[in-house]
Amino acid sequence: MTTVAVTSPDAAASAVTTVELPDTPDLLRLLPAAGGLSWVRRGEGLVGWGEAARLEVTGPRALAEAAAWWAELSAELAADDPVAVPGSGPVAFAGVAFDPAAGTSVFVVPEVVVGRRDGVAWMTTIALPTHPDPAPRPARTDPAPAPGRLRYADGALDPVSWCAAVAAAVRRIGEGELAKVVLARDLLVTADVPLDPRRLLDRLATRFPDCWTFAVDGLLGATPELLLRRTGRELSSRVLAGTAPRGAGADDERLAAALLGSAKDRAEHALAVDSLVEALAPFCSELTAPEGPELLTLANVRHLATDVTGTQARTGAAGRASLLDLVAAVHPTAAVCGTPPDRAAALIGELEGMDRGRYAGPVGWLDTRGDGEFGLALRCAQLSPDDPASARLFAGCGIVAGSDPAAELAETQSKFAAFQAALEG
Image 1: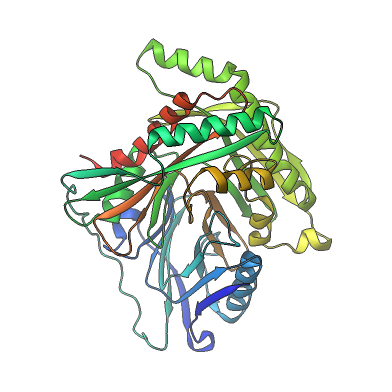
Image 2: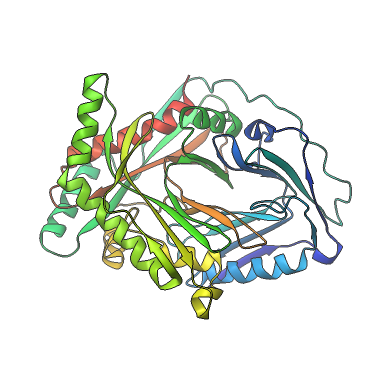
C-alpha cells in the first residue's frame, strides 16, 4: 500500500520568478534558524526555506509516485527563469527513505531558493496566493553559540551487541549466503540547549569542504558520496567503499598506502562499483568506470573512490526515465546495503536492530528541467522533531569476508566523529 500526503500550491495562481543576484552570497549563512534546506559544496549549490509544496510518500511505488507528482507540478508552475542553469527555477529538495517501500520519503518545494553555480548567483521565489508579497531579500544571520554540555547514549545496540551482529554477519558471509552487508549503528545525543542547524551545517561545511552539506526536513549531514547527478543527459556518480582512519605524519601516509593496497577493501569497493554499473547500464548509451579506485582524503578518514560517468540513452524507456526513476533503479547500491541487495537488506533487518529512516537513503534536489543531484545521506544526524536539544547520529561500514568486529566498530566511531566535531566546541 502506498501512503501519500501532499500539500501543493494553486500552481496557476502562483508567480515563480528567478533573478540573478549582483553578489555571491555565503549560502549557508542565509538559512533561517529552523526549516532550512541545503545542498552545498565548496560554497556552491542551493539553499531554501519556506514551503510552497510538500510530498510525503511511503510504499512500493514511492519514487514513481514522487516522479509523477513532480512532473505534474513542474508542468503547471510557469517560471520566469532568465538564469536557466541547473538548479535555477522551481526546485524540490528530497530526502528518500533507505527503504522507500517501508519508510517515509519527503519532498519539499521551498518558497525561496538561493543558488550559486560557477560564480553566478540567483534567487527563485514562489509567491503563493496565500502569501502574495514577494519574498524579502535574505539577510545574513549568525548561528547560535555552542550547545554546551553534550550527553551521549547508545542507540539500538550497545557496542558489544553491535560487534556480535558484525560477527554473525561475517559467519553468514562465510557460509556463502551473501558477499557483503552494510551494518550501521546509531548514537543518541542530548544538549543543554536546542541544537542550531545553521551552526551544525556551517561547521560541517568548514571541516569537510569536499562533501555535500545537506539539510532536508531535519536530517543534516555532510556526505562524500554522490549517488547520481544528471545534467541534461550526462550522468555521474562517485562510489565510495573501503575506509581507513587518518594518522599523524608518516603514519598517515602508511595508513593511506595500506588502504590502497588492501585486498579486502578493494574487493569491497569493487562490489560497490559493480552494483552501481549493473543498475545504471540499462539506461545508458555510454558508461565508463575506471579500472581501479583512487583515494579520497577527508579530515577524519580516507575512502577508496571511483567516479563513474555515463550518457543517458535518447530512445525507448531508458530515454524517458526521469532522474527519480534512475535513483530508484540504482538505490540501494552495495555501498550502503550489500551484495546481493535483497539478501543484504534482509540481513540488515535481522541484525541491525533499528529503523534507518532516511539515513543512507538518497538526499538532494531536482529541478523542473530534470537536472539534479542526489547523494547518500551519510555522516548525518536526524534532529528530533519533539525535542530540539536532541538528535540521532548514524554511521555504518561494509562487512565482507575477513571483517574484524573491533576494527569495524572503530570505523563507525571515526565516522561518528564527523558529526560530533560539528556538535562540540
